[in-house]
Length: 75
Image (cartoon, rainbow, N blue to C red; front, top):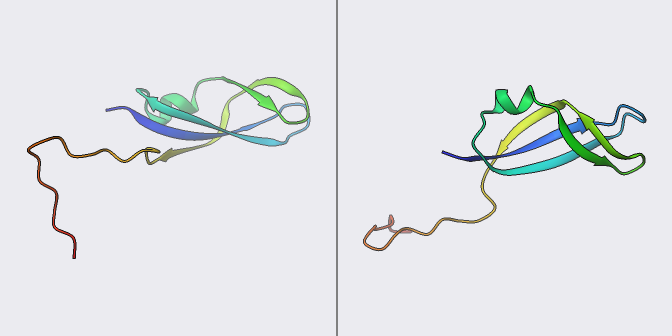
C-alpha cells in the first residue's frame, strides 16, 4: 500500500533545512531514509542529501467509500 512521507533535508553548504513531500511512495520509511534525494535550498539552489528526518503523513485527500460500502453513522 503506497504511503506519503515528508522528509527533512539539510543543505551541505549553509546547513538550512528544507522539507520535501513525497506522495504515494511504495518504499518504506527506512528505504526513503537510506536514499539520497535532490532538493532545492532556499539560499544555495539545487542540492542532494540524505534525510535528517522521515515522517509518514496522512494523504492530502479523503477517500470516499465505494458504492455499496456503508459508512459508520455520525453522532
